[in-house]
Structure formats: C-alpha cells, structure tokens
Image (cartoon, rainbow, N blue to C red; front, top):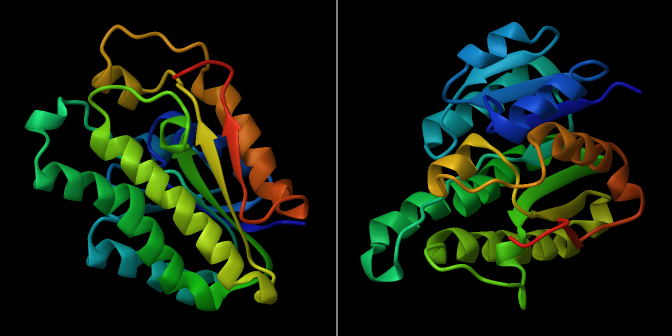
Amino acid sequence: MQKNIIITGASRGIGFELVKILSKDHQVLAISRNTKPLESIQNCHVLSADISKSEGLEKVVTFVKNEWKQVDIIIHNAGKLINKPFSETTTQDFLAVYQVNVFAVAELTRLLLSYLKKGSHVVNISSVGGVQGSSKFAGLAAYSSSKGAVITLTELLAEEYKEKGISFNALALGAVQTQMLAEAFPGYQANMNPETMANYIADFSLNGHTYFNGKVLSVANSTP
C-alpha cells in the first residue's frame, strides 16, 4: 500500500538515499534548503524549505494540507553538527544545533499532528552519542546533547499519542560516511555508507511501528 512519507534533510547523505529508495513505491515529500541534487530523482515532491524557520515549517504544512491531507511517515533526518571544544562552544552554537536537531523536530511534528492518523509512524534520527551510558566524544557537547534530547522527546510523544495509534521511535545511528561527518571530522573514515544505512531506515520506517513504540534502537556496528 502506497504511503505518504516526509523526509527532511533530503539533499545529501542518508536523506538523499532515503528519497531514492522510498520514492520508488511511495509518495515522498523531500525537504531541503538545497533542492538541486533532488532534481535527478523522479516520482517525488521536492520542497525548498528551511525547517529551522517558521516560514519553512509553514511551507511543509501548506503542501500537506493542499496535496495529501494525511501523513503516514515522517523521517526527521535533518541534522546539524558542530565539532569544537566546549570552552569555545557558545550559546548561539547550542541554539543553532538544537534549532535543527530538536526544535524543528518538535514543531514540525506538532504542526502535522492533525494529519497523522492511526498507524502513522514518526521516526527521529538520533545518534549513539545521545544514548545514556554510550561512549562520548570531545567536541560534540551541543550535538550529542541535542540527540539525547530528541530521544527523550520521542519517548514522551509515544506515551502521549499511543491512544491515537501514532507511533514514535528513534534510531540512534553510529558513524556513517556522510558529508556532514566528513566536514566535522576531516579524514575520519566510517565503516558504514549512506546507502546501507538508508536501506535499514527505510525498512524500519515502513514496518518498525508494528513491533516498536517509544523505543530507541542503536544502529551501529562500531563506536562512534
């Protein structure tokens, strides 16, 4: 059965691969500030929007209201990573990271609540760095703490909307060889590529809510 799927952070890395995979059989709304890379993908709706700003969020809501009326899956994949010593990390750095990794996730979900129905699945992409008790890495105070926040948000929303049959789960990813990783950690080579990870996330988004709700699943074969 064809589903309506929203994917944020869709222009590169895991998000781009998710759009390619899921648009083969489903209706996909691919959201990114930079939409040029997405022009090569057929059978998907592309929306240029900055979800860290209210205007960008409203663009998404307007599309759903006019075109779909219902959302089956949201994959909150957009992310921002700052790698710098904590002594140099400012409040503005924290706000910039949390704006994308936490606030946009919460606000976009809230704005789309009326379009989520029984059986809808919201998948929040977190990080193993945000999991309590996992190995932590210097320089990621803003990033990893934001990923911890989105994990707790996931658990809370699952509880609040379980009676409506809307599922919320978080996937805590290990290192994946994306452009974002390369920009933050020049020279580091992860042993997971975006295509492989996207295949897992795509399958989980379609089927994971059958087995899980309010859960955090670590998806990593190494640390980080």
